[in-house]
Length: 312
Image 1: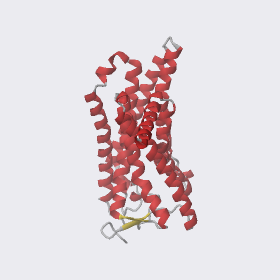
Image 2 (image 1 turned 60 degrees about the horizontal axis):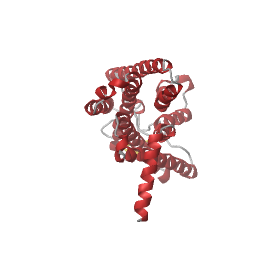
Image 3 (image 1 turned 120 degrees about the vertical axis):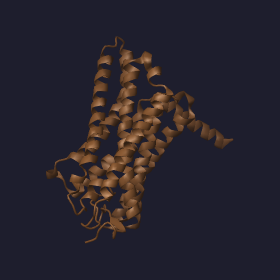
Image 4 (image 1 turned 45 degrees about the vertical axis):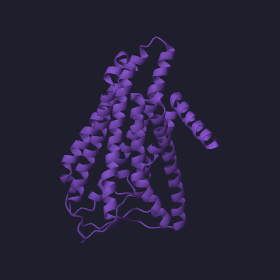
């Protein structure tokens, strides 16, 4: 049986049996990837270039867009290349990189969404203290904590996973390398070795979830006490995009990792993994821009600037 020292590559799950269908999947993935690049790239550029958007809310949104781009770029380009060239192989180093980077960006994104819930809570429930609670230094520290929690979680799982001997072959039942699929290839009862890392991940995920729920309970209580209908509408408009993104993220990830084994199947697992790993990065920019006039105006000014510069 092969062990970790003899493995030079892994075989990922194929999307289809024929090269024609593989090319169809390549076109679909290319569309998703370009949508994610365009949407998140516009947010990054608009927030960076428009000084009116240099506020805590848009600083955190910029970080979220960067995490979305990083997350989808970790998995989708390799899947596209494999579909285009009709292959399933990924090098050992490439697989290890995906195992490290995907949970890093995914956990950091979840932590960033938690920080953004705090930002919305302060803006609506304690507006007079917004500047003191969310100064530039505090914002940088919270963003760094979000990125740091993701990195720590990813390192714990990656080191533990690749310290185990792998003797169950090199076929990964997923279109990218992730910890649960690599652990299935282990010779030992890997999940017992994962207890410490899983405890950290569960504590972090549960803590963030509780914080988001409590924040929104306080937000909705404050909004419902507002005497002005216009004030209530403005407050809900500030919160709904973030709430929609959180709901999409949590529901797809929850179903992907905690669905009952009785309903699990390779095709369902593939669809669910696509939903939680590829759809949010492509859809999040659309959700945030639909009801955000400031962001729309910044993007419009960006386009006008580019057109005028090209014209003259």
